[in-house]
Length: 112
Image 1: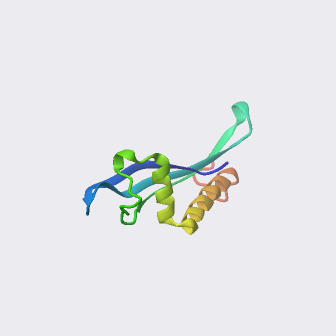
Image 2: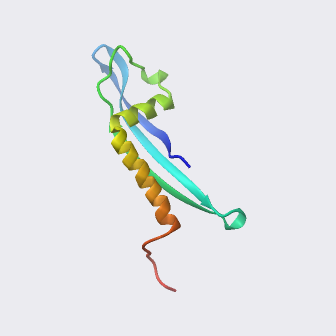
Image 3: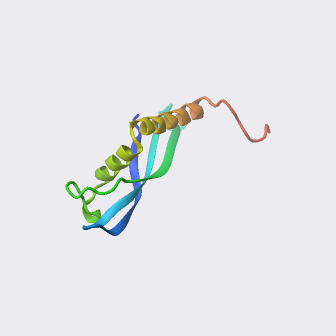
């Protein structure tokens, strides 16, 4: 499957220079899952990550006010602020969580 990015919350400032309702921070989640088996024996293996990223200063030529921002806008801004290397690292980490769930390399608990 593919990692799904979502937005949990946006932080905004009332005014920055001549702009109003400026988004300054995106709080995001990224997750993926893989189902192994089917029916009653199906097992869903999941991986996820959560974080927040500050956005660079708003540009008046391409500004979008808080009330007009879509989820797609916010996800794109978060990914751009993180940078492609960090986005890849997050998505690779989620895939590793799923792999660890499917084929554990460690355990905890008690043997009885």
